[in-house]
Length: 346
Image 1: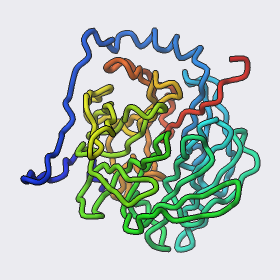
Image 2: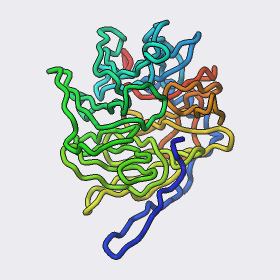
Image 3: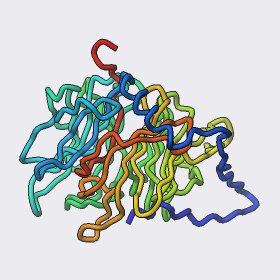
């Protein structure tokens, strides 16, 4: 459905030179056998993780310490489904989507609240896939392609920018953006990095989009769901269903590109790995992992689709396959995001 893992068709011409990322290995990479040491590291790591989870027949947002301890249900609702959380860069706000209503009246909306779950406010109706700018003063989101609810992640049309201080919304300068999903905003505010599927002349690709212009560039890396590191220098993404990859972002040339790419986590079939997200200091990445299956034709990595057996994990971003589970109940635990606010006393 998403086309993840399928490289876009590439044609070389005399007028365009496509630079593909070089896959490298890390000498002396830490093996998975050191997972116990990683668990000890995360026990004292000051940042927390927020994620979506299916509990007692309802999607909720849980917050936990980096090692998975001290879990707290941040939303606690029984009549709506909270999903796809994203913390602001200062950790003060949480943006998320809510699936509300049933049947033909069902709709997905973007909301925002304080990090403790208070002061919950509607940001945009029929919207999804929200992300913050570098200082947390603006929130971007994708508008739904039609009024009819769908789980399809790329059923979107246009990037919109919301200013929480004024309540104003504006559309991105490029009005031809559509079928995007999982956008992220570079810390310097200059770029969006997003997946596109069956849109804008692409079968499936990861794009660099000028935040205040109309330029769109294919990064020529396979896969989907990119995330930019907090320093803006690296990108993490899923090149396929069973690997997660990290590379360096290079904006120095005439077009953006990704270099020095390497796999940070791999997973044997049928255990998929998705939803990679950088920690605030770039030392770790969180991700989701679970069995490959379909529910009524829908794949489990899609927002709002049940994913039995899936759990949140954390990996060492400087190693290969040094990771641990931080949830273990398999209750559709997905879409982890780090909260940059340190825990009290740290």
